Length: 188
Ligand code: FES
Ligand code: FES
Image 1 (cartoon, helix red, strand yellow):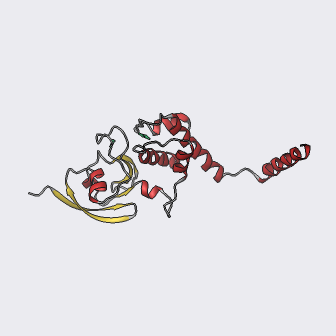
Image 2 (spheres, helix red, strand yellow; image 1 turned 135 degrees about the vertical axis):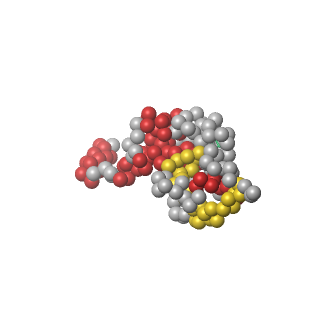
Image 3 (cartoon, helix red, strand yellow; image 1 turned 60 degrees about the vertical axis):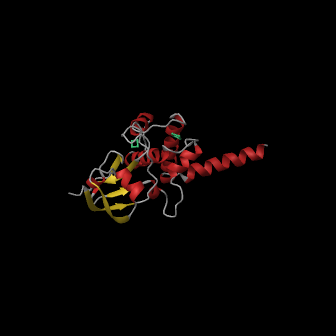
């Protein structure tokens, strides 16, 4: 009896017909069968988060999981969002990715897709996270290069920037600030 199964899987909005071993991991299917290289292979044992993707395993409830731990066949009929579709529609960096760069939270990069995936989900569910919320959300992600301070700072920056864009400084405050600045210029 063949141990291969066939199923459909949507990855970053594109539908695929997949043939895979019944115990083959979602990470192996993504990287080796479909050529989706955003999720990285780190420990391959659910301990580092480098392979994190956001997946709906067919129950309509998408959440971040370790693709190395999930048999791909359990995602039959479901959908997966990788770092490739966290980018903007034209491939531009997301605000979270921009913040990681700005805060120096990227070095070798093996962990980065997993951190950005987890942080993106956090900010979608909690736009104003505390430091503890961020640390809890990133608990399953390991980084050997940067230390975690810069990564946490990047998520704080992304959250703050997003809130400021959604709730810009009131015009009256900006006008007051502008007139103060003008006054300073006149004093000089
Ligand atoms: S590669 Fe999946 S958790 Fe490390
Ligand atoms: S940047 Fe190298 S492991 Fe995180």
